[in-house]
Amino acid sequence: MKKYKKWIAMGVIGFLIFLGFFTGYILQKQKSSTPLSLIYIPKTEDGTSDFWSSLISGARMAASEYGVQLKVMAPKNEQDVKGQVSLLKKAIEQNPDGILFSTSSNSAANKDLKKAKEKGICITYIDSCTTEELQDLTVATDNVEAGRRLGEYARTIVGKDDKIAVISHVKGVSTAVEREQGFREGLGDYEKNIVEVVYCNSLFDRSYNLAKELMEKYPDLKMIAGMNEYSSVGAARAVKEAEAKDRIATVGIDSSQEAVQLMEQGVFKAFVVQKAFKMGYLGVKETVLHLEGKKEEKNIDSGCELITPENMYNSEMEKLLFPFNTKKNT
Image (cartoon, rainbow, N blue to C red):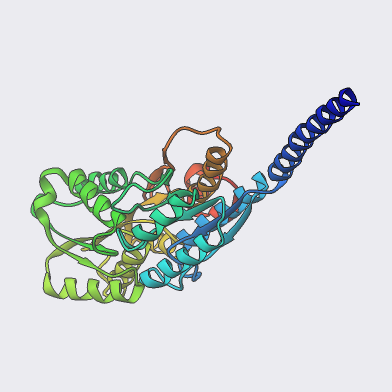
């Protein structure tokens, strides 16, 4: 009888071990078949910026191709830092596999990003970074290089004593700081020609008014350089309205359909185009690869190109200027 009890006990133990392995297998199977969940928080999704519209479209295409769930949560405008932080808090509560984040402030979200990291949520910075390296990945334009390329070209179309004004977007954010740095480096010894740097807080109207004030303050101004779509296009509108396109060169970073038209009209002399669609696409793709343990590279440069009236209709440049007529800008 004792012998039978021993065999029964061993059988029960064996069954329990098998049940444990089987349950673990089923749970692992269910986990592997559940799509990864990602939340992207850009600076805005208000439809007025071709850059953000293109970037978000790229992210959504990658999500579709890689079979992941992507939710976009965006404040109404780039100035709504509190609103973006509030959305980040809500995203963390949903406990997704990854949060993709384009910060509107260099530090306001740091505390909450740390909480996300503590919960094991993958953090991917897209386009801009915070003061602390809290991210697992960064997918962005090399903003210093973008500014440098614009500065190098700008130097070829102004004289050694010509006055230059810079309209940037938001003071202190990484993209503004790095692009201005690169622009100054590209100008070389012409950097001394910069008479003033002002900030439009990523508002077209604010940039437009600042450009008008700069033209009035410096009657002999020869160039206005914008550091993003809002600052560049706003300045170009003011130069066009003043009928000053032949005496004041407008250059910038980022493009839009309006910017293309302004270049065709001779107002823009050059702008550097970020590969926004590619940036969004790679943001999702690289996050998925990281979560699947297939990616070790931490910093991914999505690239940029200098557009001028001479090359704007080259086939490769057209893909950047008209991203909605193509798929992935690779």
